[in-house]
Length: 188
Image (cartoon, rainbow, N blue to C red; front, side, top):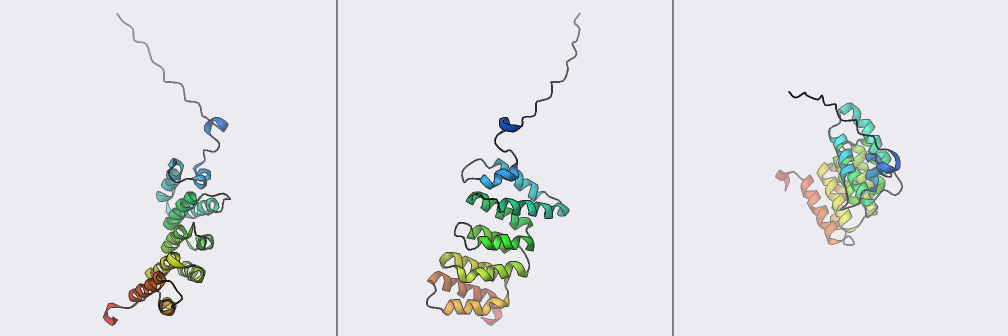
């Protein structure tokens, strides 16, 4: 006759902290160190928190994203990931930080992407304010962003850019298309 031996549950796993866990395992601290082509698991963790957040927690998450964005040494990839998430939950509170990035060559696209999706006059004003400080494809992209807002305030600016021979061809073409976007089909 065999007797059954009661098995006990395995012992709990030890919690690894400090140096054994790595220099910093907080995903909010690590996302600022994100590098293109490197491990993105901590970025994914932050992304999931943002995408699956309840509306009442988004203000706090926006603050955390802005804090991370202002961290000294934030990498280009980290900045891009943070701007991408601000595009999802950002409000007018994000506009000052994002507008500061518009004129930096390495962050223009990421900041514009976020500002494109933030509703309201503050984001539009930030895009307009950066327009004279940009040139070439960055300026053309900004014109496209303003055109998507379909704000008639931009009509005279677009006309001036389209007709300015000192602007690059890509800027003049973008201004032309922006004006077409603002013009109702029945008036073309």
